[in-house]
Length: 454
Image 1 (tube, rainbow, N blue to C red):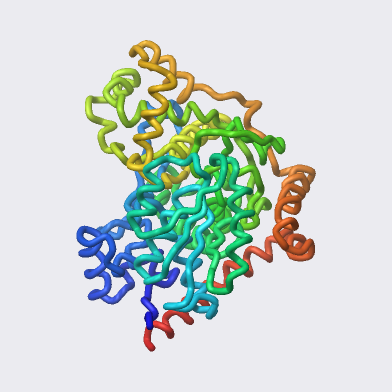
Image 2 (cartoon, rainbow, N blue to C red):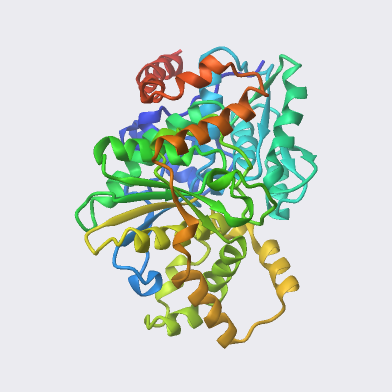
């Protein structure tokens, strides 16, 4: 009979220094030792061993804007991505509710990549079998990582922007009561994790720069969980503007566009159930090839970029392996929003690096095959287009009521199909719905603390 394997509360994920010293020390040792040691559950945090928030400040010579652009770094989370946090939170809350039973339940992870890796990883640490449902055209590294953690893959047709087919496949698994779907697109532990842990971590990171405020929070939604951090930032700084980024090739939030794109982890042709569109102020479009080329420039052509922007040799070395493709989308979007909003040197823009480069060598190899070799001059032109370009017409203000109604309409179109009532969806049109869900964290933490003492 399997037993309950404890993990951290939300408060401990935000502040792991509050853990008992023996637990914290064991977790830190596991981070540099056995990846599959369950003590790594207590390493689900944005903080490093020094208790500081892991982040980088992008050089202004690189960004070309006066604002401070801060990137929270997710690759040091267990499994290599911050998506492990929502995976753990969803499983943990299911255990506390009695919906997930050690020794009896199987975890089902609908995903396009990092969340599925997180499901496989957390399931392995907590002793559950896992099945990850993913599109068949994702990067080879994603599939390898899931199998490495013992997860089984169930692949659906299409690519990143065909996630609806993943959700449809998930219906079949719900028929067996032993299966528990860790549904990142619809279950609110994802929202709670990012609003509390990511949001407060972003606020703390920004305290060191400029005026200490957050002028803009910029992130590309896959599940839209990360955007919940904007709710917490707005709770402290109501003037903060939240911008959701989309692939130009799949502009669903922007204008109900649909299409295939190459930015793995975002742009899923829907308004997710957990996306609080009330607090999204802008939507901006980013070309998918700009993200791939931007990653190549920062990962493989750093010396060239340093010369182009007059940085000292080796200045960009600290970014080596920190960023993935969706991170480049977030960086490019942050630069364009800072320019669009005319932000100055006292203003801070915060964004997220979901994962690192380790998941994308095959994607850049495919890019090189499709594109062929480029000269330094051609790469310089690419840099200008990516980091200094962008069109104001590709940034949309979604604060007007008609835009909110349009986004709510998209949400209803998808989620009534998957069994959610219009009355439940209607309740999401009030900020009190989201605040009430957030306030459940206190009781959740107390329940977990009691369960750990058993």
